[in-house]
Image (cartoon, rainbow, N blue to C red):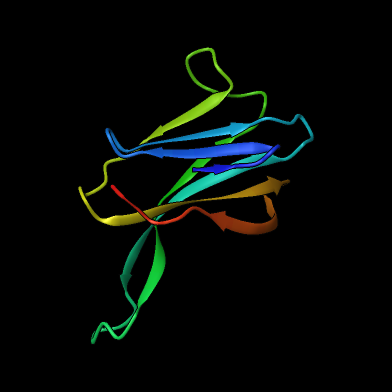
Length: 106
């Protein structure tokens, strides 16, 4: 989970749900994604994070089921190392860096 005063991104492994909430009506949207930890090369000399599921975003004006929360349902292989990342966007461009949670399991 990532939580700030402006937004929250939470991954629920039971059902592979990613919830994104934009708390501030400031013209920016919140984009969330799930990354998977994989071997960095053929010899697996280290690990790197790669995008596994993307395209989950929220503004204060959209959501699901009458709430302000965008619910993205993904199908992810069970028990793999994943993390949630989020960034703020405006006009189709990222504003600032991606922020990522600690590693968890899908």
